Amino acid sequence: MADETEDEIGKDGTIREKLVATKETWAREGRGLTGTTADPARDRLPPGQRLVEDWPVLDLGIVPRVTTENWTLTVDGLVENPIAWRWEDFQAQPQKRFVSDIHCVTTWSRYDNHWEGVSTRHLLAIVKPKADARFVVCHSSDGYTTNLPLDAFAEEDALLATRWEGQPISRDHGGPVRVVVPKLYFWKSAKWVKRLELVAEDRRGYWEVRGYHNEADPWKEERYSE
Ligand SMILES: Nc1nc2c(c(=O)[nH]1)N[C@H]1C(S)=C(S)[C@@H](COP(=O)(O)O)O[C@H]1N2
Ligand SMILES: [Mo]
Image (cartoon, rainbow, N blue to C red; front, side, top):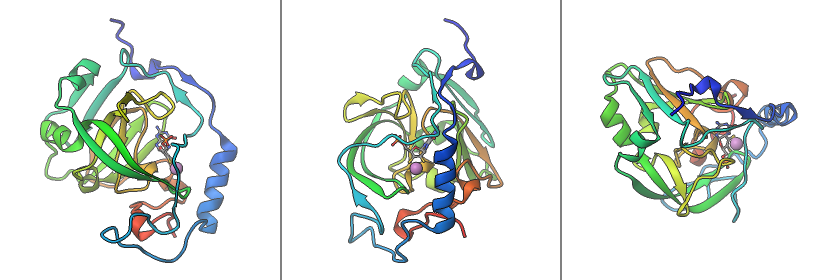
């Protein structure tokens, strides 16, 4: 099998600069903010969200050609056991099923998504974070990054997903493997994930440096930073 490195994975498309500029404007203007909070124990829809039935595609416009043949996952940084997995290694792990809702900061939510993949808790049990590891930086094959606290990454419903509604996750939606962290706005869920870096100091990702909130809890309407 060709030993294709992550840098050799092809990318189709170019960054949609207008879309990025529009989303930066939304952040400055506080688009979608209602100034309210909701209680996940009582409500299903977070404040300012509306329900959709289909599953929209959102990304920077660069769609990498990641396949089960050339996909690799590196987990490194502050871990006792760094790993570099290929598809076969990933498939050899226990596969779990999760059902969760998606909440996108652009105000759509989609209920009852059936995911299958490897739980982040299982992954962390293998790599063994060092005591000073407190954040995870997710790196994707399109150049996207997003950061989250290790605790949020380790929530019991978070996973590295390969299947959605019983089918392999499509290329548009980040297949063959994407992160899904349902408790946070969906930009924290990296498509085409290739590297998870555990760090001691927080480091903001693509949208987090462009006006989007560092924590991103939909129930607290953490859409934008200041
Ligand atoms: N690699 C990568 N992951 C990404 C993005 C991206 O541009 N690149 N966009 C994020 C944003 S803003 C959202 S809303 C969701 C969209 O996922 P979907 O296209 O499957 O709905 O992916 C997130 N993960
Ligand atoms: Mo988004």
